[in-house]
Picture 1 (cartoon, one colour):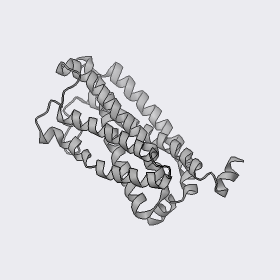
Picture 2 (cartoon, one colour):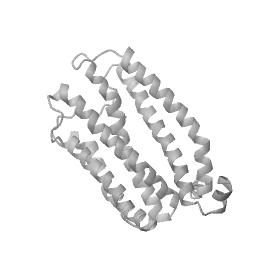
Picture 3 (cartoon, one colour):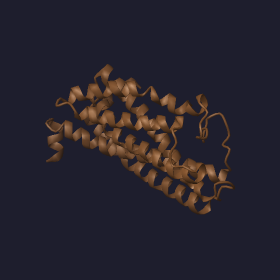
Picture 4 (cartoon, one colour):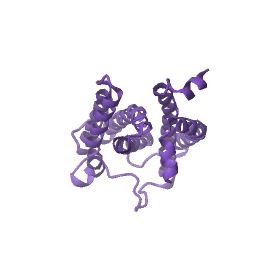
Amino acid sequence: MWTFIHKLGSPKWSYQLCGRLQPCFWVAAVLLLAVGSVWSLIFSPPDYQMGDSYRIIDVHVPAAILAQSVFVTMAVASVVFLVWRIKVADMAARVIAPFGAAMTFLGLFSGALWGIPTWGTWWTWDARLTSMLIQLFIYIGVIALRSAFSSTEQGAKAAAVLTLVGVVNIPIIKYSVVWWNTLHQPATFTLGDRPAMAASMWMPLLLMVLGFYCFFIALTLYRLRSEILKRESRTRWVQELVK
């Protein structure tokens, strides 16, 4: 395990590993998203209360889950960078931040579309919605702060610190529906409880969640390879690679 972690600190080895894993996750993402979308839109029955509008959750739920998961991943990468000075960890944190911001925005936007027929309004200052909006601002702040420094290392350190401060908002998002009286429904999936929805509804949703994760990993591997080449452009192995 420690040998593997040590190898991840090598930009060259990480670049090669990303190249080997990337096609597998692209194929998995396409298959899962295709099957999940067709199952949800065509074969899954409408909800007895919300009708066809409930199908928005097949995008909303994966986006909301990824929005939080990506930020936790950024926080872990930030700790690795600050403690062990592994620059590949900072590269990973940099390339996944825009994706996390996009998922947060998609979660808010799809939630607004779902709220119109369900709540009668596209927005309310609900605890879950407000904490997700704050999360979007934190994402934007991390991205902007990194670009505010002329030194890459200083920007990386500042972004890492802000990420670790911002990760406090993640449990607030997760438990907001428990701690406060909110309009937002509880979690759709929990590890200890059986889904309240019929299998014909939650199974395509699960495929969509897995497909979103595979898409995130594939895109991260692709962008990380580009970031490694950019930062290591003066090294011998990159110069030999691009010849």
